[in-house]
Image (tube, rainbow, N blue to C red):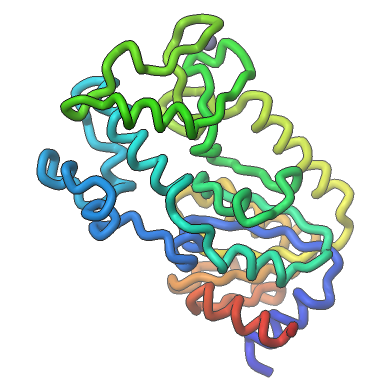
Length: 276
Ligand SMILES: [Zn+2]
């Protein structure tokens, strides 16, 4: 029996599934933040700063917060709101059907939310680029990023957001920043803690479960990959991983593991063909 079919049967027969998704899933879905995106969306940044990758550009050592915010608002607005909702995500949702599911993802690009996954079943462990929160974490409040980005984009002059258009926390006067894991510690506030609680409750109550890992690499394995290995080992859960990279696996769970070194979109489409 081929691996695709074997993995499909495991997924098809399970009642509960935990999906762990990394950057590889959005890349397979079609998210392009490379040179083509830079040239389409913000070519002035290639000319002025030599930026050729929108994501890496977000780590550029800009000389002021005004300059950083001008870049971030344009780049993050693009990949959180402007890119299409990728069919791969809705295909994944169709695949899991009415199973009891939960998703843990490092992707802050909003694709799970925009494609109709249940918001109550998502743990965005690296944050959501669609949220702003106080950079000093003085409170638990979050703010819809869309109008904030749009205001900054429309008021940017000479690659800088003027002081008066920098978003400010109404409670303490600090700058509002994207709620994500970064130098600013504003990620692990109420929305994050609530998601984490629901995630832990899912794990406590699930009984038997299949672990489906999609495009999770070794940038931050401590967030999804290692916990999945641990859960497979401790609970005897089947672990299915789809990834373009060569397999790196602990030998203790090899008998529970199916590793598909294939493009995720191809694999999910083949699974859907089997289902339909
Ligand atoms: Zn504040």
